[in-house]
Image (cartoon, rainbow, N blue to C red; front, side):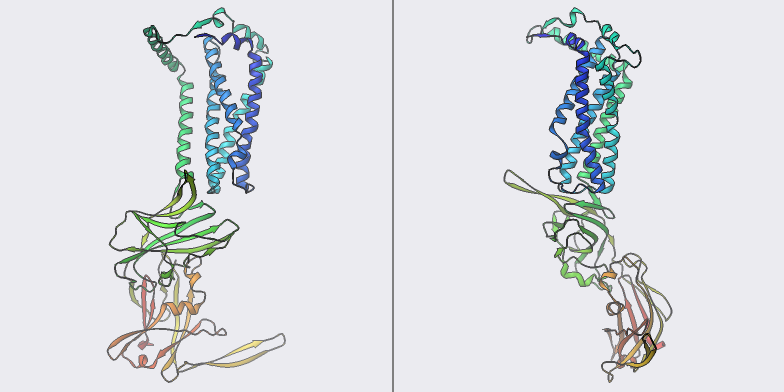
Amino acid sequence: MILKKPYAFLIKNFRIIHIILSVVIIGINILYGNINNFYSGYVKGTVRDTIGLASKYIDPLLYLLLFIVITFALIMFLLMRKKQKPTFFYITLFIYYLILLIMVIIATNVMKSVETSSLTQQASRAYRDIYLIVSLPRYYFMVISIIRGIGFDVKKFNFSKDLEELEIKSEDNEEFEFVLGTEGYKYKRKVRRTLRELKYYILENKFIFSIIVGGVLIVILSSVIIHNNILNKTYKVGSSGAIGTFTYNMIGAYETKYDYNGKLISKGKKYLILDMIIINRSGNSQVLTNVSMFLKAGNDSIYNMPSLKNYFVDFGKTYLNDEIPGNTTNNYILIFEIDDKTNYKNYYLNILKNIETKDGETFYNYSKFKIKPIVLNNTPAVLEKKPNEVMYFGANIFKETNLTFKSIEIKSSYEYKYEICNKEDCTEYYDVVAPDNSADNSLLVLNYKLDVKDNIGLKQTTTSDKSFFDKFIKIEYNYYGKIVTKNVNSKIVKTLDNIVFIEIPKAAIRSDLVNLLISGRNYKYYINLKEI
């Protein structure tokens, strides 16, 4: 095969080639600018249609133009080295546009992933800033290419002299025979010599090659980080992620065997409670089915059990596997029942990211939250309290919610007065609170101060002070040698501030033991009513 060396052609058409290079670089600048526009628009929230983003913002022509520049830079580098001319411009041109090609490939993958799961604001801002910074050197290469194309040298103001110094020799245009299969030892010797010269050349230009290797390593490392921490990120408790059309923020994870009153729920079972904020970013109501979201423990798949919601009212509102309205933010708990004998090392909440069909087979792709729950299996501490002593419900899920009874009285009825005012005057009224069954019951009159902390699950399930007392207050007394614990049905009158009425059996008052119980998950308090 007879080939001709290209050096003479490159030297003769040096300016024209650089003018063409300038046009190609300008084209790259325009097409690459679309990627910057995408990230900028995504941060601002103006990118709404996420279908087909890669084809919309990345023209296939961009890959071709980048390949042309990279190939040209490599050829010109070899020519300038042969002519013992400065190679810095062409080696940096090669490195930069190779990095630019890798950045375009990464951007393509990011845009494809955004079609099924959103980027966080932190990630989108990072992408925007990185791509903007990387895009800046392209203007330098564009200007230098134009200067070389028109034949103007900033340093010498006479670029034509440089072309003369390239010295076209006969050997630059000579033909040479390229033969395979004969005299193999000559080619082996030539390969060894080439490798040896390459080694010396690398050592002589180790600074430039260090930049090349460093740049490639940075790009590879960035790609790995983006793949593991953005595109296929495993989330943790306390973090949030946009998956599909929802955003999930896992506030807390807890493991327990007991209900909100500190009672064992079921022998041989334990329960994982996940406290989550779920945002439906779409305009449509959607249901998170057992396919959309489930707990993975070892090889077992475990599903949300909303039927257990009444045991965990202190954690918050349970997701009932029903529709989540579009464009809403909701705080739910998920309840998973687990065999107490199992000892899983890790739990993962799997959330459906997208569904793919390939060769007639359907694939379900999931994002994951790795879960390490806080264990709440301690037996509640039992403490005696008196009026005006503060009772705390615990620090974990209650966040120092507390209750104080300022005074406690036992009465057959409670008479009170109140005023109703209009614009002109006020009128006094009298009313009486009495037990529903006065023959068997008396009234426990409690002046209280209840401090339920904000942003806790209990706020969602106890919408009033009455609902709080009905859940956590009980009467305990001795009835003919048997300890009886009785739930209460409290009464609160709107015209009386911070007073709650609880019916108490007269049999309890007559017994030798009668306590007011305040039962929570972490603490169980009692007040001896015999000492009132």
